[in-house]
Image (cartoon, rainbow, N blue to C red; front, side, top):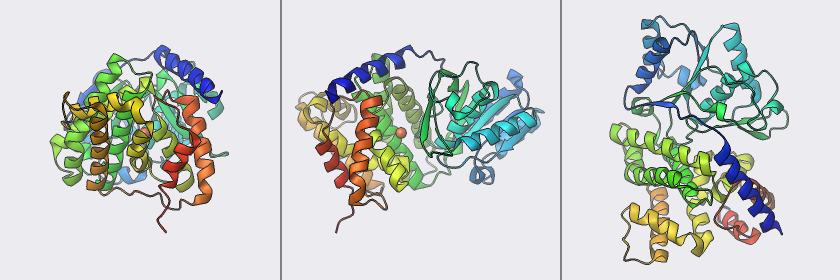
Length: 400
Ligand SMILES: [Fe+2]
């Protein structure tokens, strides 16, 4: 009965994802594209700009080139650097208050997934005043936000192309997914120059998040010919370049490719949603504060192995794509090679395998919430049993 309900939910989600209208952003790509995007503010006549970022980035010098370009063009701006990881709605309100008092007319979000999520909602809140409840759900905002420009400083979340912002309710501490096509930025810069200072641990974790988006999108029953193309492109680029970017952060070819991979993966999963890897990873984030990319990396190969036969043909496609075999090999062998390649990538980049603070007493809660989240939201290729999910989570406990 539960599976029937989940299958019904998956159908509803699939159709909602297909029906939500969306415009593709104008994308500037390559080293220096953040400056090219800053130049567009004057060309487009957007008026005074609110730059949304976090305190670390505001003091890191990463904004210097953007600010110089705005100064050169005579564009006034204010900076809101109050975004924290897993941003809560009060930070969004504080950013919007600054936008209002400074009489800004557009938002430029410069940062990782948290900053982009907050910046997207600040732009929308300004034209749709209200509390978080007014945004909780799908297509709740009535009016488009102020013009929004996004410059990701990490290559992973894909927030620069998705129509979602995840914002924490400051009272209940619940993470609220705001889903609205009006959250998609109008302009994006994928700038390898901006990303070259990213530490190796963040490069690895965010890259594995992008890989998870691409693989879960490719396995989703909601996938389409267009999302398959994007997911495959992302997988191809990530296997070729993620370890290179991790080994040498100044490898601009690798940084450039990873920025594009994360964008493609974000575009793909925006149409298909994700799967059990995210369903479990979100619980590890909630209970152990495990960073999102790290949490995905901890369970991605294990979830793929648990799906079993039903995903062998799809994973075989990805194995051939990444040079792990050819059509002459049987699909089970190819699928296992692809899973092993993810394990090898995880090992090469020294990613942590166990969430800090996880205890046996957490397992029931994690499994229950992962089952509910996945069943309600994600069109997965097969519904795993509680026992199968328990085995995956139990494998994350520290060794005695
Ligand atoms: Fe993710």
